[in-house]
Image (cartoon, rainbow, N blue to C red; front, side, top):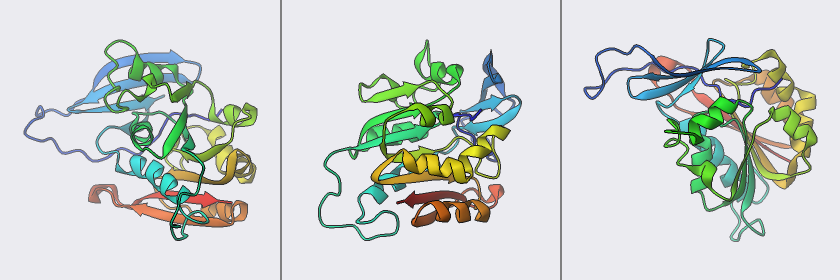
Length: 257
């Protein structure tokens, strides 16, 4: 099964004067679900999502998650997709239909909801607990998704991403994927199918004419980039600087037909 829960490598955190001296995590909620245990933790001023003991992501930054969406929408405004010059007039007849794979802590959704170029937004998340952390009770993650799940133009699909792609008739102007640490570091083994040749054909088939696929990765992956170039005629790679302690830059791949 393919997880639609965002997964990022952990960042090195340095306490500030506003934070407690200890950086020990405090469990906010713990759930058992169809895919195992999922935990929401608070560590000083940031929140963390842990799945089956594996760190998925936290709220310490969000720069690359926001760039994922912004770069996809920027590419839609170009003449022929990623890497092409911007034409003098709008490319589409109306706002972009956006699919976000993985809700996570909500940075990507918040970015899409705040951008006037985005119209109907569909976010696919298989973990009910993650959705509820944004919507139920005190909703500890709601401020990071800016309450976007309550909007009429935002639809949340609680499903495995591959299942949704295989069963939906919808076509999207932008598909933004942030469900793993990248094509080479997936949350579950089944996720690898999304980044293979068949998965890329499926993703391309769910794009509207002129649509853009954006994929987040914790590091560059040459094998994935080769498969991406075999599936799409236009591919670019954007690097996102990160904290020195984290090493190599994050990467956002952009592809269009």
